[in-house]
Image 1: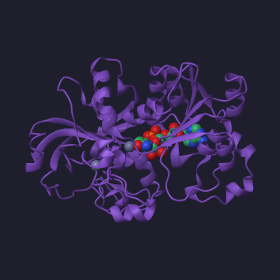
Image 2 (image 1 turned 135 degrees about the vertical axis):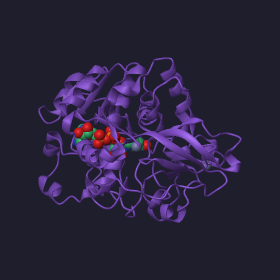
Image 3 (image 1 turned 60 degrees about the horizontal axis):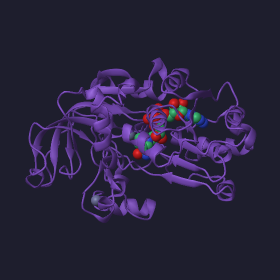
Length: 387
Ligand code: NAD
Ligand code: ZN
Ligand code: ZN
């Protein structure tokens, strides 16, 4: 499936990817998924896509070709999940486990430097800024640095149990882990999309005293409650009042922003901000969930921010952030840092990631399902596609 502009994703024939570098491998994709991050491209919130770019960064499949320098690690027929963060495994950042800021995997490093000041890792299907690598919502994908950019998975588990190791399971996990959860902590998670769902279950697993889930989509809130969270629907109740009641008026020690750029204005934030200012907010200013978090979090608390932002978001309440002494942890996920542990937890049955899947369809149905997922129609939480 390729990107042709705002709300224009097409399923069309493209040339089969080839080995271009001795460390590459080519994978025949057996399952892939649509991510909330893809929606930012679908909505054209993030610059740097070129018409024809193949979408997708959550995929798995079977190795069909291996370049000579990756043969020590991979062979034809291996079953692999592909982490969305392309990592060389040998640069100073990779050696520290900071795989999403690999210094060598972004072949468009100068573009990243213009946007971010320094380069970050190459990502699949995610704009020229992160390398312009073709994505995995396709029959085949070329994997650069394939000897380090793969997770070998056993044959006795379904694709559905393993696929999310590519991104959203480690993303929800990292979001919770980097909060440093203590047993007395309340963790509040804004956004109950797939990332929020895994963040909620991770926070429960990591022993939080209570987990609060905020969204406005009833099915997603029900799923969050089934995972052990106390749901708050920001369209029908005051987030501030409910959170105050649950935390003795002090706010949660730990907060997760699993919303990102698509944030809707919640009722509470309306009362906190001048509506006139909101009316002139650019699309890149859609940081409503983050603002609410900064106001409601307990002083000396920690915000973990897997939600993706782009551009120069404006009107961040820096005064509140500074005076309250808030720690902010963020980033694209260092996927490979967590996948061994998470795979073991899946194999042991401690984590079953399949609960988020609401739609399984052919790749050809993908363009319509982008819209279904974006608009949360038909109870949609997570779409898996079969090429
Ligand atoms: P999603 O779009 O399905 O989920 C976002 C959810 O936030 C929706 O359920 C929406 O109803 C809810 N929401 C909107 N406004 C809100 C508000 N003001 N308060 C509370 N909830 C609100 O997407 P997803 O797949 O779950 O992804 C979530 C975010 O995580 C996206 O920004 C995505 O780009 C990002 N992401 C980051 C990484 C990473 O490595 N850091 C990886 C994957 C996804
Ligand atoms: Zn993703
Ligand atoms: Zn590296």
